Image (cartoon, rainbow, N blue to C red; front, top):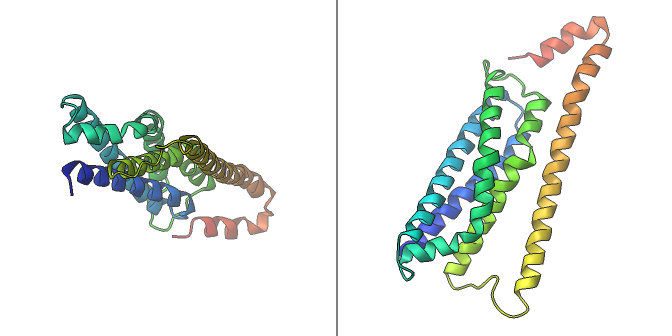
Length: 208
């Protein structure tokens, strides 16, 4: 296997792993587990950004026929979403880690719906998943599979990709909104709780 294909496969694997981790975070019900998963995602995201930046810089400094230049050209499509990851996703991951740390003192402390809603925010999962898909397209193009090449193919392929990413974005937004509504309803439910049931509810919420 050519060296530039090996590099591209590594980059794609890191971004795809980050997308998978981000997808599963809102399903976690323990604050400590959520915080640990955020740390994994933060490390994967930094690794993906570092590898992508290194490949692009190497391509800028090499002649047009070099393997580094071919690898950089294959990652051109991923540059935009990777920049969005660097600008938006990293900042939200830092805030999410700090929020999870406030609830993670005990191993079985439940993760509040507000924390899970923050983990489900579209600007966390969506940019990572779009970057992963873009790197896979780059790997296929570098292997000779012209995903966006050929007459009559480019337009439909772009349309399908845009529709797919829109559907993913809508799904992220709906999940985020659902968890955010649950987070808003929790204080109201606690206020409506009968006085005799308060000790039982509190014990259940803080069971460790």
